Image (cartoon, rainbow, N blue to C red; front, side, top):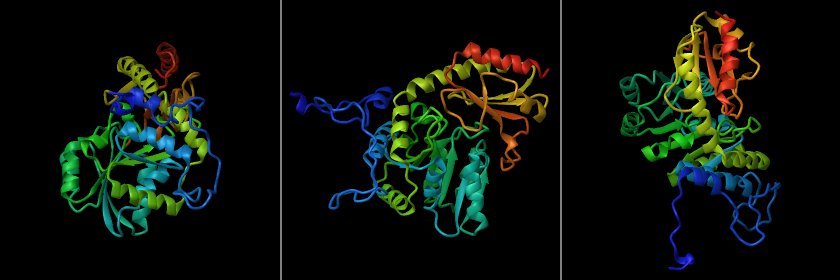
Length: 360
């Protein structure tokens, strides 16, 4: 059989991250899709205008779509992606959401509810039976797994069955796990959402979001909303996010390896009252034994760990989440969310250990 007749190979995720979304392999072709800076296209084609499409977005969407196993739409930010998905909910319909979802998602739900647009039904993700029962009468069920910052893990298949039985869409925010560790579309989830700002881009230099689905009709509806609202990424942001995606598997593997080592050590430290870790990924939450003041002090006493609110970059960052007034009161006041980077784990531990030692 000639190469032209050979079936397309099926690559594993690490290979997809490196190879997907590239130009055709031809003599003198570039290895990377260029940044296409245009607002206007010559009439008569499929795109017509810069709000409807861009070749640089397409390359990013192809790559992330292959990784997640669906079709991808890129957005100006993670919250733009969240907002577009929530627009699927009709006037007065009910959204079930994990109580400890990302603060921006919870704030969007509260805003929509305060204006009479939706009814929000917040649930504790650890109580699968309660989540299943809450799905009755819902139009959309929103999960994070793990949650931010409580790091609860959902029983996705059980909740999927309940959501679909109720006629509701099931959405999973996969920002923390990434498609390297979890592929919700393979579990018949309807929509996956990412803050691509975090692990997908991975270098703390891009604001972007993404929505993925393998339902063609749903894809068309979501693209129509993006076209109409205009919550589109810039082509340079898409280029940077795609470049970051090339090393996603390596960064996630190293961050997870570091996190698992730190978890073992943090559990033995007298200044740490509780360690929350779902067993995978690069995010840890700790609760300081001496309370909120100790948690605040910790985030200002390190040299390598950076006090910052974002996560998923190559560098290690942390913050006391309840410093944000909109963070749920059910999050412990002394909880510090830690985004473990790809530095040498011994340097990370020595920096933490020094700072923790000043608290006891």
